[in-house]
Amino acid sequence: MSTSEAAFTGPGVLLVLDGWGHAPPADDNAVHAAHTPVLDELVATQPSTLADASGEAVGLLPGTVGNSEIGHMVIGAGRPLLYDSLLVQQHIDSGALRAHDQLAAVLATVAASGNALHLIGLCSDGQIHANVEHLGELLAAAAAHRVDRVWIHAITDGRDVADHTGVDYLSRVAELADAAGAGRIATVIGRGYAMDKAGNIELTDQAVELVADGHGTPVVDAQQAVRASERGDEWVTPSIVSDVGYAQLADGDAVVWFNFRSDRIQQFADGLLDHLAATGRTVRSLSLAQYDTRADIPALVQRADASGGLADELAAAGVRSVRIAEAEKFEHVTYYVNGRDGSVRDVEEHQRITGDSKPDYVVRPQMNLDRVTDAVLAATARKDVDLVIANLANIDVVGHTGNYAATVQACEHTDAAVARIVNAARESGRWVLLVGDHGNAEQMTKQAPDGTARPYGGHTTNSVPLVIVPPLSSALPAPLPKRATLADVAPTVLHLLGHKPGSAMTGRPLL
Image 1 (tube, rainbow, N blue to C red):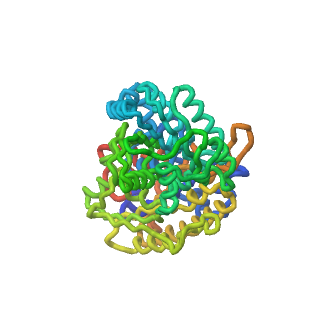
Image 2: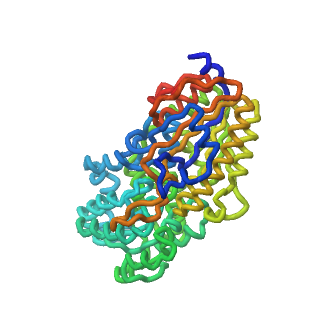
Image 3: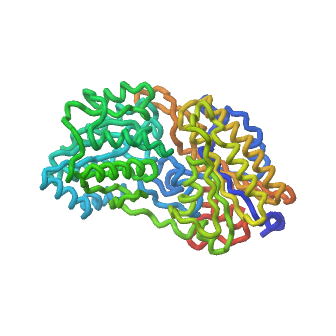
C-alpha cells in the first residue's frame, strides 16, 4: 500500500446515486443537460472510472439492462450474482421448469378437478421484474397437462419498457397462448395499481378485486383497455375482457405468479391471498422465483447464494454502519446490500426517511432529499460510525416518470446534496465513494417498434461513474483502472476501511 493510500484508510461514506449512468451528450441525456458543477468537478479532478452495471458483469443475461435490485446486491456481495431472470431462463432451457414436480402436481390437480389456472404477471420484456417470454413456458406446461381453463391476468408496464407499447406486448401474449394452445387474457391492469411499492393499499386492493372478484371495466379486448388509458401503460385501469366470460377466482383454482422479481409484486400477492382466505376460498399458489411474501408461496426457481458479502464482513470485523435512504430505496441499502437478508445486525442502524405527503415526483423532483442529506451529515459527524451507506434516489425515481424536465431538476438537486455530503465527510476525515447502481436518466427516449423515439423512463445498459474522494487532509491516490464493475465496490470499501476483501468476493479493490 502506498503512502497516499494508507493516509486515508479509515471511516467513510458509500453514496449510491440511483440511476446515475454515463452516456455521450444527446438531446435525451438529462444527466448531461443538468447543471451539476459538483459532480462534474469530482469526476474530472478525483480518482474516477466507469463501472459496468448491466449484463454478465452483474449476473444478468448478456445485453440486459441493470436495475436497482441487482445493482445493490452486487455492490454488497462483491461478486456477480446469477440473477433470478437468468436462473429462470436456465431452468426453461434445460426443461427443468416444465418438469418441476410442484408445477406438475398443481397443474394435474387443476386439470382433474376442472378448476382454472390463473397466471399473473407483468407483460413486457424489460427484464427488470419479468420477461413475458417466460409466460410461454407456463402456458405450454398447462397445455401439456390439459388444463382447460387458463386465465392470464396481464399487468401492463410503461416503465421498464417504452410507454405506449402495451398493445404490442398484449399481442405477444396472445401469440404465446396460440402457440401453446392454452390461455386467454381475462383481465388487464397497469403496474401502477398491481405493483405498487409505496404502501398505497387502495391501489393494490383494486388489483385484488379485479382478479379475485371480477371487478373492473368491461372491454371488448385487452388492447382496448390499453388504448383507453389516458395516463399511459402504467395506469391502465382495472379491466375485464368481456368476451372471455371470466367471473372470479374460485375455490380450488391455482395461481402462478410469473414476475421473477419479488419486491413490486409481493404486496399484490399477499393482498390477493388474504382476500381469498377472508372470503372462504382456498387456492394453490406458486411463484416463478422466490418471493418475500408473508404468505407461503413455493418458488419454482430458487435464488443464488449472496452470503459472504460486505454486511457479513462488516459484522465479523465489528464495523458499525448506518444505512440511510428514502422509502423508495430503503430496502436497497439494507435488504439488498445485505444479500437479501432482512435481519438487522448488531453493528447496523437503519434509517428510513419518509415525507409528510404522498410523493409527486414531477412536481417535487427534490423528493425528501434534504432530509436524507441531513441524516447522512448527522451520521458522518458521529465518531462511533465507521461507514455510512446512503442512496440518493432522485435521478432514478424521477427518471422513471419519463418527464425529461423533472429529471433534469432531479439531477441538479442531487448535485447540491452531493456537495453538502462530500464537504461534510471530507472535513470530518472521511473518504467518499460515489457510484451509480445502473443507468437511467442519461437516456430518456427509446425507439419503439414503429421506429419513432418515445419517452423512456426505464433503465439502460450504460456504465456508471465511480468516484473516490479522499479526506481533505489526504493526498490523491494513483488513478483508478480505466474500467471496473459494481463487484469491485465492496472490496474497495473494505480496503478503504482498512480490512481485506472477503473470501467470497471476486471483485478487486480499485486502489
